[in-house]
Length: 413
Image (cartoon, rainbow, N blue to C red; front, side):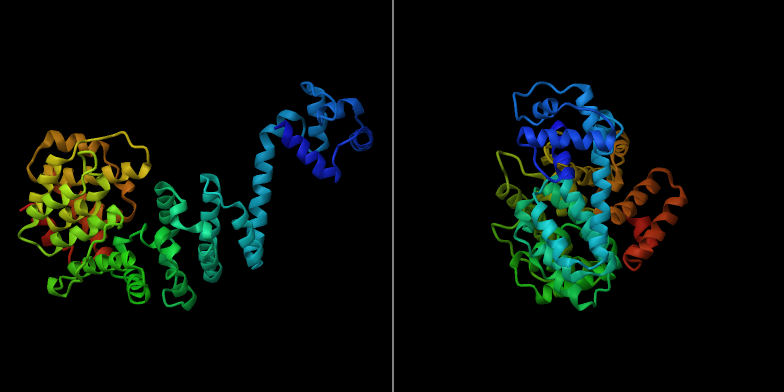
């Protein structure tokens, strides 16, 4: 903080302290402004013109007062806060005065993929979404530094979830928004991260259809086809009309799991045999990465395929040591599938152990879906009709034609 105190002092006076003359000049300025006598030799030592010694409390307090703080302690506590708010107001002013080039330069200069700046960037993009400045958002995502490969997966999830949940308020027919969603960085960081299963009947499917029709990248098109197939399944369309998804070696593990999930949606009679092949193909050091099962776990729940649930549960070794937060998210997904299975077979001891540690809100994209099935489980446990009421309320939003009262009552039959 002493360096920061030197920096803001120089910024305030408008000249650098490089000589005896500069030190005397600053001493005179402080005496005039704060009525405090501080020796030019003290100033020379503090700024390193002569051999530096540890600054006294008097020196630190004096220079802190010169910069508008009560003392050095006040400076250490409030400098960051004061400058934080100053920066926040400045950014807000730039956004609302439509100073696009200035804001873009600020982002480009500061984008270093640190968590602190990513949070600020998310705040900026969310505000731009709310005021409808889709052109500037597109320009931000066109920056080379915004390539998804420059972010770790945790930060991708943070950005995708924080920004994606605001996309629902946007007019999907807006031409500038349509250009934005065709930006590949935006697709990688937002669209493919925040998969809004609770809104497949509304805006989210519209976005996916636009990207599928106009996008060119193979993995994103396959992702879209998986979402559209799921929507057709929920709308009870015949599987003959489903897209056939083809896997590529360089696809992300979650996308590979989405592709395999199509066998579940189409009720493939050889699903266990194909699952065995998929499992062997994706083993890493004798274990399958849990992200390779992410969409499969969810789809077994949706399709009530208890045979596949049982097979996966026997194969997966429980693990709680995760370097990245997203790994915990995936494990939470696996736990939920286990909860469904153990509810089916009435293993009350395991049900209690899992439900105690399960946090439904951690599902993010799946939250509405998870709540639907959690209510189905709870009804089987205690037969309380309030669970049916909560289920029907959520089903009305998600897909009332698929998530019916009959589906609720007969799920485990």
